[in-house]
Image (cartoon, rainbow, N blue to C red; front, side, top):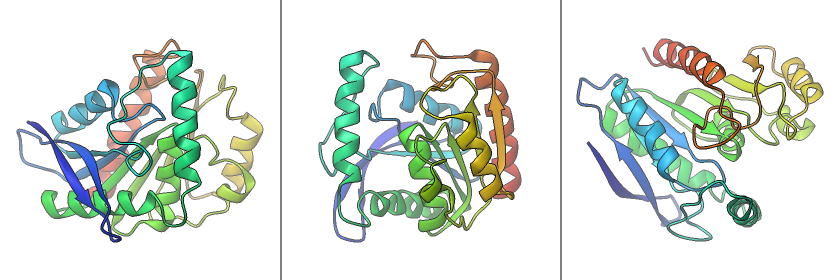
Amino acid sequence: MSQSIQLKASDGFMSAAYVAVPKVSVRGAVVIVQEIFGVNSHIRAVADSYALAGFLAVAPATFDRVQKGVELGYTAEDMAAGIELKAKVEALPSPGVIADLQAAVDYAGANAKGKVAMVGYCWGGLLTWRSAELVRGLSAAVPYYGGGMTMEDESKRRPRCPVMAHFGDKDHWISMESVEAFKKHQPEAQVFVYEADHGFNCDHRGSYDVKAADLALERTLGFIVKELS
């Protein structure tokens, strides 16, 4: 079962979220953080897949503070629009979208009556990495090819929960040199590199790599089950 809800942040801002509810006993919750393309059909499908695995899945609309109802595809025009929206969100005064992610985690924990993990992709991977330090109530964080998280200032954050990160060695947005530097700054994080490009988990993109996506998901599910048990 799925539904759209409204989340209320600490500053009173209301943002949308897609929620997928498992048909079996709930084993915890996962907050799914979108790419720069909004809570589109791919992100909803990711949330649905986590619900099938037994997790309450919540996908907050992290563009809502600058534009409501964003749902983009993967054309060059869509990417340009998403990059512009991301820049507007990143320019918001603190805490900005982190307050909406906190609201999503709070909702997930209350409704699953259990622990909460966060999984994010691309820009959502960066937000997931930041949330590991800044958002209360997280028991695990899994950034996929988080753009910017391997830069020196971001890589020095101090996560308050276990982290597993996934990268592709053909990613022209994230250099392997920066991934190696990130590993040195974060020796306790589990970092995996795949023979794949940026966006390898998204089956709507030309960079989709089924082998890398399946292996990353297997590792992610094992990690989440362990940390949420």
